[in-house]
Image 1 (cartoon, helix red, strand yellow):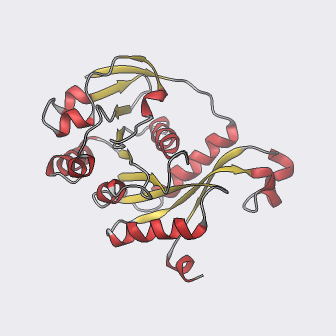
Image 2 (spheres, helix red, strand yellow; image 1 turned 45 degrees about the horizontal axis):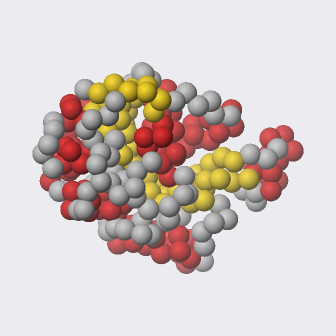
Length: 240
């Protein structure tokens, strides 16, 4: 196994609480909710950050957690580790170049394990839809309490729907004020057509002081900051 030290970036108290809320919402979604795919509509909405901090939040709550970087096209997950050497990743394993133990990274955070994406590949969709990836998730369920999977933005490629169909649930990250409601609805529709179990959305980069979600109640106390809001985009929203 590979060993790495992750960055100890200190989150603000309010941001930590937002991740705890997201963690609790997922836990309350059902006792069998173990594999969660994280995606977004477009790049730069913060989905990888949400996936990483959510996985770390579960680990800090005493869970044994595996974070899988399945963004095989343009991964940014390496930004989160401080030191260590990564020789093998998910693509190495999926093409048969290494074992699962070879690509698994032990972190210095107790209970927190990571599989990074590995080298870029010309066939990411085929690898994520392969029986090898399916088996990886099935076997991981027997070892880990939670498996969080970072997937590419669904507005650009279909990879997230392919991976999400194999998971217990999918969470969509939406950057506040950057993406149109209609575009998000179209992407959510793609997930449902792929028979993914959509849990809801994380509204990311919300400026709380002026936000209609929280500003009225918490603005005077918290001031302005960027955090996360967990909401459900259900069938009723489609009808509005």
